[in-house]
Structure formats: structure tokens, C-alpha cells
Amino acid sequence: MKNTKLMFLMIVGLLMVFVITACGGGDEESSGQSNEDDTSDASASEAPVEEGEAEGEGDLDESVSIGTHASGSGYHTVGAGFAKLISSHTSIRGNVTPSAGPQAWMGDLNSGGLELGLISGPDLSWAYTGGPGYDEANEKVRMIFGGMPMYQTGYGVPADSDIQGLSDLEGKAIGAEFGGNLFMNSIAEATLKSVGLTWDDVNPVPVPEFQAGLDALQGGTLDSTIPASPTAAKAMEVSSAIGGIRVLPFGGLQPEDIEDGIPEEFQDLFDEYMPTSGLATVPAGTGILEEDTVHITYDMNLVVNDGISDDTVYEILKAVWENSTEMNDLISYTETLSPDTMLVSDPGAPYHEGAIKFYKEVGVWTDELQEKQDELLAN
Image (cartoon, rainbow, N blue to C red; front, side, top):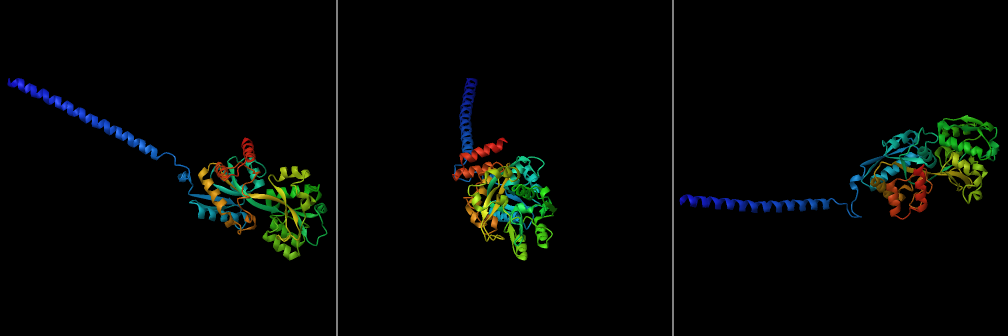
């Protein structure tokens, strides 16, 4: 009987253990469900932020460097100004890397070793396509903005010279080569061709740089040379010393001749020698100019490697767009920089996607610009 009771108690005890175990298992399942809910909450907290929140902050570069011409050049002055603006109005630290010019730094930018650079429109076109001065196409370069017009005089002569126009340069000693400055050489050759002259028709005298050409003009060993910009410090110095420099306008054109843009007969010269350039009238009183004078004009542009994040480019463009007035008193090239001028309709390279995003948001990106973008990318 006792054995029967003992057996009964053992069976009851085992049943109780099973019941308790079953109840405990239910708690673990509930706990497991709770963990899944926690996981769902964590996923929700990592979902993309809503528009207007700090989206993409983690994609911003900590610093960027801007490739420029040598210290003391206008490009370097502009680069230093942008570096300061970027540092002041974004979390990105801006720096400047001076060099001999875009032929020196473009390879680094194309490979990603340099983030940004300042370059003329024609040079940008050549860099992107592998044109003059570039051994290969730099397909990674992208446009951010322009809006910094530069004015190139072409050839000039002493104010008291009997040379009245470009055609009168035939047989004269004129500055040439300019230390291998490919763009200035292109301008020189196109300027001569605009009146039917070639290097064979003149006496080209190699000079190491345009400043040296101006020294030779002052010294009387050259009849004509390129002052570069009407506001170039060296041009103004020599002009003051010799009683003035008179610019011989491209093609002999007068302001009224370019009211509708580049005359058709000169368009092929621009396409070949000065892509993305145009003509503009620079008013009397600007630097060395005594009268309104037709000049070659092109933009200085800020460009970037296409691997730089969209957020970084977006923030840089936004900062300059909203604070462009800080650049207006820096140098003549940036006097007119503003949201009205920054978007260039004929860029030498495609725009960066981060720039396009910003331009679309502010409502200035057009179908025509997209067509140009697609055309450049297709080439």
C-alpha cells in the first residue's frame, strides 16, 4: 500500500514538473517575441530620415582642397576666398593647393587625389576630352559652378603706336609662346587668324610669360604683345609707364558688332581654339582701357572629382550660392558672382550629381541643361 502511495506521489510530482516546464517555455516564447519587436523598433530607428532632417551628414568630407595656379595669381586668390567661405559656412574645412595650373593638378583630381579645382572654360573642355595640353581624357572631372567671367585682351600696342589694327601686325615683332601657356597661345593664334594672318606673316618672339612680353613692349623690343587682362597688375604698371596700352580687338570688331553674340564667320575659330568662350564689351575705364573695347571672355569654374559625395558638393554649392556676396569684393573675377550667374549653360564638362540636385531644388535646372548634360556624358 505504501509502495502504491509512493508511486502515486512520484507520478504527481513528475506531472507538476511538466506543467511548470510548459509554463516556463511559454515565457521564453513571449520573451522571444519581445526581442523581435525590439529588433523591429531598431530597424525603424535606422530608416532614412525625412526630408528636412540631417540627411547624409555622415557622407560629408571633413576637408577638401582646391587646386589653383601659383600663389599670387588670380586663381589662387579666388581659391583662397572659396576655401575660407566653405570653412565658414559648412562643417567642411577648405584648403588651397597651388601649382603651375590645371595641366599640373588635373591628373590628381581625375584620380581622386584632389577634390576640387579652379579652371577656365576652354581648359575644362580640353581636360575632359583630352584636348591640347592633356595626354588623355579626364573623364572624372565634373562641373559645380562658374559665374566668374574673365576678359582676355588679345594683342595690344603702345598707345602712340602707328599700328591701328591686327592687320597692321604683319611683319611686326610680337610676343609668342608665353612659356608654354597653351591657352594664351591658342588665343594668340586665333586672334591672328581672325584677320587672316598666321605666324608666318609676323615675327613671333618667344617670351617666357606674358609679364615678360610686357617688359619687352616697354623696352621697345616688341611691337605688340598680349597684356592678358585689362586689369592685370603688370599691364596697368607698363601702361602707366609708357603712356598707355591700346588693345587691338579680335577680328577688328566694335561693340555694336557683337550685340547678337559671336558673328557667324568667327564661330569656327572659337570652337577650335577657345571652346566655351565668347565675346564681350569691356567698358572704358576698366584697367588700361581708354574706350569700350571688345574682349574674348570665358568663365573661371569650380570643378570636382565625380567620386566626391553628392552631399559634399551640394553643401559647398549651397554655401557659395547663399553667401556669394562675400566674394564680390575679393578680386575683379568674382565681382559679379551671384546665383544669377553661377549656372553655366555651356559647360566644358558634365555637372556633378550633387550640383544638379541643388539646382533642381532651387528651380533653375532646365530641359536644355539636361540635354547638354546627356550630350557631354555620351561623348
